[in-house]
Amino acid sequence: MSSLKEEKKGYFGEFGGSFVPENLQVVMNQLEEQFETYKDDPEFQEEYKFYLREYVGRENPLTFAKNLTDQLGGAKIYLKREDLNHTGSHKINNVLGQILLAKRMGVKRIIAETGAGQHGVATATVCAMFGMECVIYMGKVDTERQALNVFRMELLGAKVVAVDEGQGRLKDAVDAALNDLIQNYENTFYLLGSAVGPHPYPSIVKHFQSVISEESKRQILEKEGRLPTAVIACTGGGSNAIGAFAHYINEPDVRLIGVEPAEAATMSEGVPAVIHGFKCLTLLDEEGNPKPTYSIAAGLDYPGVGPEHSHLKVSGRAEYVKATGKEALEAFQLLSRTEGIIPALESSHAVAHAVKLAKELSQDDLIIVNVSGRGDKDVEQVFKMIKGQ
Image 1: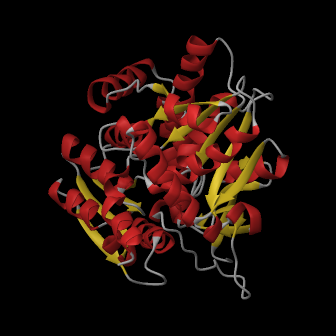
Image 2: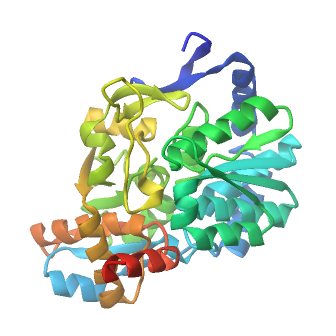
């Protein structure tokens, strides 16, 4: 780490910061300057909201899951429908915001990492629309698990690079993308998909994903006249969860609950460490290196988590619980059968905990579950798991 320069900014409590080589810090500073210039700029906001409305299809519904609620007999469950966005997940909220920044910076080459492939698809989609070169790094294992998304990205004109170093999963894709940025920072914009990485990325991703809770807060007040008892979202790197939590963080009576895979339980078992240029709770092996992880949901298969989530955990503002792959698989099927909504395997972890919590709460309580994506991408994988192939 001696070659890295730590910037004393972008911290959430003890977590965050920027631990990158000095030449890359120059790029981070430029990005921060552009973000601070444009994030509240009326013209930028108008263009961003135009594309959210006309291209993504926002605002999406807050759907009352009546059948599921009746079956469980406890709290009322509402679903925030990020699965209805163009490209099928919450990822495009952030991608659109960052591509508009890249456009203003005059950059024509976009790189990104992806796990489940949804961020890659969203990035390839907007690059096609804005006529930009697009390179997506994806772990080799994930390219096999999510072959359909790989084809989608290629169909949209992106070059998909399968990374077979390490475990060939999301962490390794991030490593490869950061290496590309170090080599090509003068003409390349790294469109990071999760609420991780060196400052200012966690703040950028939160800003653009906060549209989720901005909408859901207004929608629940319109429907119920009060705030929810709890907001539940799955957590891998943490982008959909920080977006789902953002406008409730200063509402102390609203429980914020992140659900991570039991097989990659960063919040439960992680310790403070630096990974990918920032400090967060991280799963480490006996040598102090990032620990190999596995989840049936490729998008949650990461040994770290966003720095703000780390702070929310340590400060006690948010709760982080575990759901097993088996529980997520059961929730995947349950929501499909009761509501006709097939959730992503990532989102199914949040649904699994909502099922447990709803039974513990009264019928006067309200739960919002962020359905971060739709399960089309996972149907073949689930079919094989259920059939035992």
